Image (cartoon, rainbow, N blue to C red; front, side, top):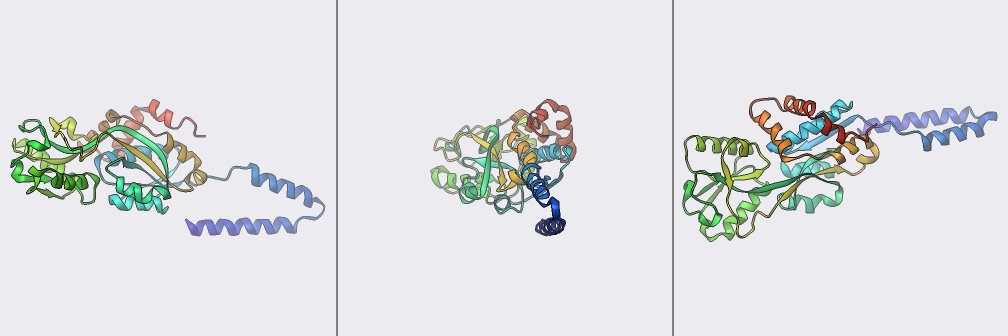
Length: 302
């Protein structure tokens, strides 16, 4: 990207020198026209955009949908899956252009604190998100405080470093009944496989969970109550962009800023993907079937 910019700068400087050499009697007129071009003509917007995301089901769905919308507008879109912490760093240092995957105020609290001053915050794109410990409804526990020796005193987690993992580690410390329990890190995919297998066999299982997520549509699940408030309350999923994106890609920035949908929207895409549909195909299907909502996101785009 820097090499392209250097080439463009060299071209502009070279053209400037040529125009200056051709001054003569019309020098004042040419200078006036050049100034007018500089101040009045819109700079051509870059059409290459890189969206970073963490490979959680929610973020796979949302990032592919936004990417499809931008692609339909003529952008060359790259979707880059990254580790949670690296995703934030990549947008903050400009290696990626934006993300629609920031969970606040709790899940990504540490990353937000570290990188917020280097990011442009565009606000929430989904409300009503939540994290916590999740069990099948057939289990005879309703609160974290009810846990004794269920599931061999083990909680099936996801990737180390995720906010829900940090909150669960805190829960193991704050709830006396969990003093000798174990949190088993894995991945979001492995967690849902373990959940599904346990439910198929009607076995006890406790997982780190979040919503929206397709598992709540596929299985009869419940969050365990959290009397100590370790997992926090309602969360939002937020959009962040790198500094300078609005100036360099104003139309893409408008789409990202306008992007907002519901739990029902995102879960529809997640269910398609979980059912075996390729994420790109699932996103394209949703975009086609929800043209009115997409039109709202692109309304001010020229």
